[in-house]
Amino acid sequence: MVDAAGALAALVHGRVSTRALDRLAYSRDMWPLATWWFQQGRVPPPPDAVVWPGSDDEVAQVIRLARERRLAVIPFGAGSGLCGGTIATAGGLALDLKRFDTIGPVDPQRRCVDVGAGVLGETLERRLAARGWTMGHLPSSLAMSTVGGWLATRSAGLLSSRYGKLEDLVLSVRGVLGTGERFETPERPFLGPDLAQLLMGSEGALCTFTSARLRVHPRPEARAFRAFDFQTVERGLAAVRRVLREGLRPAAVHLADPSALAFHAQPLEARARVAAAFLPALFTQVGTRLLSWPRLLGPLARLATRCRLVFVFEGDPGHADAEDRAAAAACLSLGANDLGEGPARAWFQERNDAAFRHARVFRSGALIDTLEVSAPWEHVLDVYQRVRAVMGALAVVLCEFGHATADGCSLSFHFITAGGPRDEVEASAEQRWRAALGAATSAGANVSHHHGIGLVKRRAYQDALGEGRHALAALKRLFDPDGIMNPGKLGL
Ligand SMILES: Cc1cc2nc3c(=O)[nH]c(=O)nc-3n(C[C@H](O)[C@H](O)[C@H](O)COP(=O)(O)OP(=O)(O)OC[C@H]3O[C@@H](n4cnc5c(N)ncnc54)[C@H](O)[C@@H]3O)c2cc1C
Image 1 (spheres, rainbow, N blue to C red):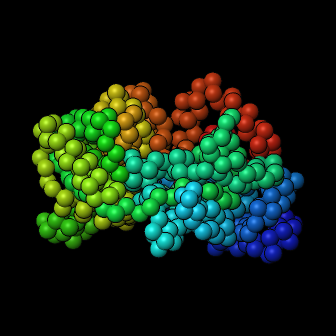
Image 2 (image 1 turned 45 degrees about the vertical axis):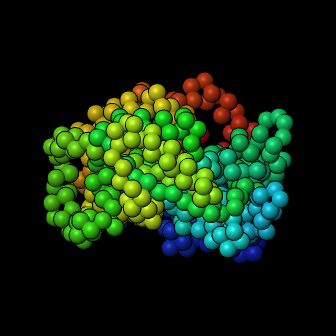
């Protein structure tokens, strides 16, 4: 590696580091188990070097050199992935794309913009907003994820029910294959197989993205907010399904099950404000001990059945209000309690905080893991019930439903468990993932909706591919003949 560092430095104007601190910083993403390791003073295998190329040519040269020296290449966005996608299982080079930071002018006729792969979501949205545009892609990690990471994982934003997932917002992509060849896909729509769609979701295992032409939308003139409580999750899901199948297009749909509702209690409500002030301390004192007995907490959690649904509609004022009224009529006909716009506005304002509240759980020494899957409407309730039934004995289970379309929705399960000796925690984390994914897929779920596969879901993903895994392996051989691109991810 010492020789290669010199050769690499010559290719990228010296922008290479083998310093321990840099390698440490690039040794993981936000995979919960790796976060827990980190808190225990343990570092996942770090890359041998970090490289910051600044042009497509530099990326191509780095990859060619890596092929010659048989070095792994791990494309790195902002490291916010939740599946261990940037962990350097075989050492090698962390290829940080953040110098690809340009945002072109918006083309108002074609409604698109060219954006570098290293641009952070928040920077992009702020820049677009200043010109009266939005991408409509607002993942909770907007401030800490890049366009390249979104492409590589097929990310989904909060408003995906209206604007689509990332892959629906891409007109073309540019980058470098694992062969070291540059590529640029034709702009959609066009005839024939779509290379952009083939490469998106490849998690750095086939190529490195350097930029994309992205669709943009005029900023909405108005938003309508409304929240409902339902007596059961089943009723809440029926309401979402009915609204989407009636052809309404809420921008955001979020259904919190009773446990998630309690965990993410709206901090803007006065009662919850008080609770929020005491919760972390309470959790530290008694929470981790209680977590040792999920068998006790599970039945208690099942006593609560109330769940909360939030809709956000947007567009011109007349349109947003009309859709809001139609959705309300559908919900009320299913026995909903209309809470008005207050709780929905609060949820929207605080939407990105919820995920960061998990930090409190980690600080208390416990572990919170997130498993997201998706399912067609016919199977959603079954997936929810089976995962809860299997996981109830292993963890405290919360679930949030979102990203709804006429076909189905995503289910984000959060599993809270007590900490403990490292071996036990690792073994039980593995056991939980296997049990939860097994329950979800046997009930008809897909392995992932938007967080990707990374290391954690690689086996389940390969199983789900069935015979299709041979086609994926053939693509890997074609686009990455030496197997240097992000080894181990996607099970490749
Ligand atoms: C608090 C929190 C909330 C989140 N909320 C959401 C959410 O609402 N929606 C959602 O979709 N995700 C969410 N995520 C997950 C994460 O933000 C996404 O997966 C995101 O797309 C990752 O972007 P990144 O730039 O951080 O990529 P990284 O974590 O750096 O990389 C992710 C994967 O993509 C590959 N990669 C990165 N850049 C490139 C590139 N230029 N070319 C090729 N491969 C590349 C990496 O090798 C890795 O396999 C959340 C994460 C956190 C921590």
